Image (cartoon, rainbow over all chains, first blue to last red; front, side, top):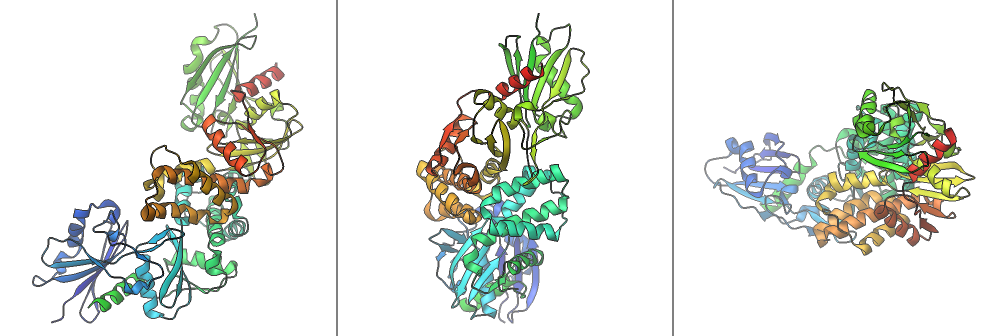
Length: 297
Length: 297
């Protein structure tokens, strides 16, 4: 009988895994918050077993294939970066040290770009998953998040990419800066987003001043928290689009990410005149892990 | 006998006060960390008395003149903003409620600009102090800090100004973002500062990507923490100079601030081609409070 195997997407904050049958069926899907950020190297195996030991056959060894931050230097076992340009679906994994005789664990490398210096770990596997369904894609993939990635893809390869700290800067400013007094809540105001977007896109040099003006507008005009929050998001995404213009101005863009954030980026890109659509396939990380597993076995 | 009076600069984080004799002599100087940020309105009087009750004459009432965030809506007593253009030395104070019969407390207003919306509280008094020594100054004052102010001054008036969140963004990124793993310590690298400055000044749209590249450079090139920290500072100050260009490109600039930060801004402005010098008078807040007191008595 052909064996089951396990695919895992192990990021800084979370671990998601899928137990896959020989025909590719998903037998189980599990998740935990024991991300790489809170684990010492010798704690990864235990965290993995806590999540799936009950599903491991007692005889033989079960293959586990992992992507993401588990392969970072501070992770389970370093999987050195592949260099751009490279095919994200062709990256050779490293074998992680394990104690349990039921496991063989391999971790996929991330991708690095020499100049300007940039790195990714995990996104390359989502990109491989995307390319499994669209092998001839020629354009840009945008993966919005804490650290948004803009990735030029051509001929099945990652040609170049750029990471922008938009999401993390938004979180810090809205939670920990003086602007927190002006924001609050999870509300939204479309026209404030659009106005912020235009300012950020067309005058990105004004960003550090436009940020404080959010606070001043609250004090002087009583701007509502929803409008302040949407304007902050618009200013930052607008500045991001300005900085990433080479990735979207003359290229089709496909967005890969959570629905809410993807919709916001889609609106921003459309307003800026880009050709853009949302990638609709769910679980591109799993698709990329499947592609890597098929190649390796 | 002419009475003593008290001048106080009461900011968000600190309170500084000076007890002044009838001839203007500084009889005592005291400071506490009981800033406006940690006080409810009815706690200000106690915080003031804790710092100077032993110096108050038992008979009659001692004038206390305050500038800064004590006059904010969440402060001791709101001192509504004066509107630009205005002479910072001519602002009428409001009287704060007090219990102690020995005190008469007055708080100077801040200054607001309608468009783009902007506010200051405390800086206007430093500017008044500067103008007391240079009444004909025609140019820009730069007050670097958590929220750096660029202030166009002409004819003894604040004409317009702009606040940039450079200092707060630097603190958040270096202490709370992924970049904290790349920085650390208080070291410095001049050439990294200069390179960051040039990038921020000439390509401010790249800021959100240049920030993440600091982390990537550590991972890929082993960039030293000192260089990473100086580059971050350079990128942000460069982006600030780009956004504030109208304030320094064709105008003389005088910098008012702490020596270390002022020197960094001086270097940046000089590298950008500005005519710049450091304001040398100490305690401009006290000078501004003295000028206001003289006008009011």
